[in-house]
Image (cartoon, rainbow, N blue to C red; front, side, top):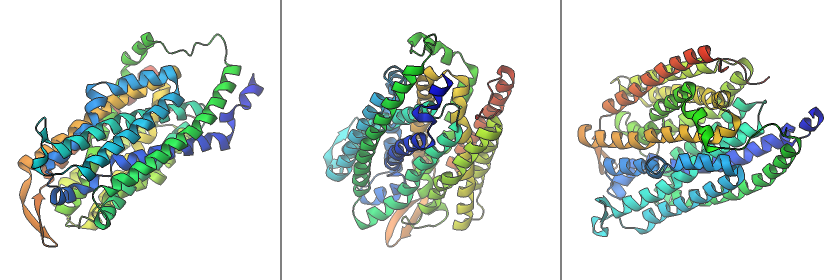
Length: 457
């Protein structure tokens, strides 16, 4: 049996890291489109007459189907039932469909009120939001699928390093969106970044099909050596092992609070740089891009530390504490210089690397492997509540309470926003995340999950 185990495809360093590179490539382009519109709030305001509320509604659409129709929950169950190949291809196809609708809305539907309204929302905004909602079903479920792929291919090996690497590559897509999207719009049109992302997501779908060939071969090897006494079949009744687990819920709520203070912030970070730090809309995206760019090195680094040294719960505590400090500094009316904003962004990048590098690899220590798809899906569902509603909240706050005047840039008139209140909201999310991280460490000591222990045995 030992000899057979050593001969499986995932025991080959080249094979398992090749599989990781392929699925990470697919997720990178999904993340690019997720944030392709994030640095364009000011441009949308000028060229298409979008308000901050319109921008908030558009970003809120990310959770429409995932949260309200429970598509993430169903997606996780389908993943555990059908496996990573069928589910992965289906989710990539949804990303392509959603990306096309989003591109079509911006390119071909008039932003003028004469184009009509749907449910009180301008037609262009509504159709773009619908495309974003469909895309979100694909990209979030693809994220769950890729996470289970890594848990499967790196079981007993460098799992945290692998998950950290995947996160880092995906964040590269976010960084590219922050930097490239404004430049593309400046030289072409508002829809061009979306067309660019659509093509790349299509290539990502093809790449995932290549991975499926590798995974089918691995499954044959694992089936040949599987112990007949071991039942790895998914049963719906097994979900009670997830929903009755306190440690699982602490991780899920920590994910909700932490990411609510990061991803929605990223949606408005470019506008923050323009309004508080006086940067132009072309260059303002470079500062927020430092946040995911730092993930390229630090998330795999911290994941490697977790693999070899442990201290997963402690890492999450440190990252949550840093998150609070970052948003407090952004809220304070001091040092309104671009270099100070860059420094704060780098610190946020470190926090953004610490927590995910320990959080995602901790789930397999709490939940059985056959239920990982459902477990990650439920966490993503909880997370999507924040990813959808927090941008809506911030957009509403900006529109109702934070307009402080007007500013003129290159002869164009823009609304001037005061971001003090939104930054205080983000800081509050960080405080709750810190409390949850402490509670998780306490629960780990009580239940012995091994969150403070190394992953490599």
